[in-house]
Image (cartoon, rainbow, N blue to C red; front, side, top):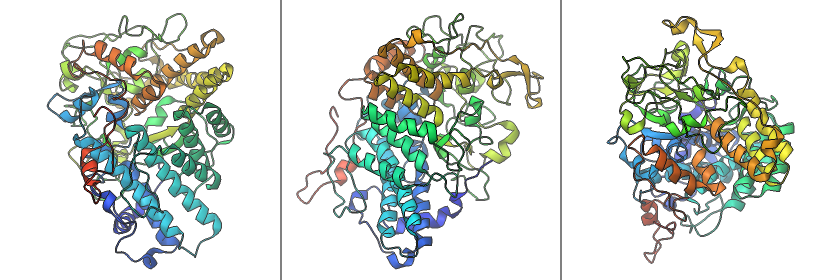
Length: 590
């Protein structure tokens, strides 16, 4: 059940935050403080409400002027679809701006970029307002002051991290910035590091509400910041501390939950694996859908009990990645697209179909909905009738974001044209920490420890209790699952030292494990870029997937350009100085 109810004051907090300097299209022209007098809120209660407003910006919803999926906190467009794990889905004429992003043919006028930019800077504005006001608050203890400052700087670090990995060169604006029109000519990694380091040094290990950032979430994010900069020894040091001593905000020691699926169920989330989540709720007593995950409201099977809309379809390329070698239970790292997993592409739902019987990683069927396999408790995925256009987006459906039929009244909001869910968005979970730590260890030559971290993740995946099962009664899914009969041929084993005998081999295995474990969670594109393998990986993906579906035909990743998205043209136009010259500089290639 949800432990996090920090959004209960959302409306008031947001209104206060907006009064203190909202980040609209012309955010660079906004003063640090606005018309609301500081003495109205310059107390403990007021600054706490501003802090809640800074948390409320995490979901990106309603902040950038565009559709909520343009600034979705899970980056499903920018991280997963652009990373080759999923097709946009639906059909070609629906949200065509995403097609341009996915094929790397978009330009700075694509409105998605502007929405994402504005939403992130709105979050930054709110954190800066907290920090500026906090300096004048007197009715507060030193420990409380450090806690609030630590949370605000953690959140600011997160918002800037999002901008950095998306756009690379962005302007740094903090609580001390007097001229809001700052150039984007300075690398902001040191500033992001400083925010997470401050948070790590000043935040407590436990918090009053689960969804608040704690010391160890800051440590994990600091390690991630080091990793993106290839500061591998520093990353190793902080990840070791997080793994050995870290706890979630409730004080529970970090660990992998026993069953992989429990990370994607609103009933079992906020657990030992939670490092930092964007908290989502549904049916919480409010009259709107806004506290649920609007950013993912398109991402349900089409013509199904979910009504809308057929987006975010896993690719055949991703599905093939879950094949395992019958003899060893290990993945095919290099040739996984040979002898692909059987699909129902072109097969009508009323025609007979037998699912693939080969050896598979069990995480596949908690990540991807495929024909003839139980789709949670909604029945077997029926195939083509739930797909809007197979020739365009393929035959598969997303699954990590799907709520269960038995608990839909608690964890889905049906008050809008598309459902909103109470399933949290994972920013960092402990499996992610283990795999980032494995990468840092491999890069510094500690191959045995790197293998141990990877095998810890695989060992959880290999737990038979966590395998998807067949229904007890194939005609009545709500009767439950047959514990004795797996839904497919699941076969997964641990790595041995022979597969981790060199740094190169170890990194190849780690990179692939991140693909398997974290698929459809928004990381893939950014991982490929920081590893320096985006061009070869994505162009090979376009070549393979383009022979199956029409959506990615014509896609091409261009090294030196495609690693980062363009600075939104709307923001460049708004950044003109007194001489009519833009303060912001466009990224190369655009």
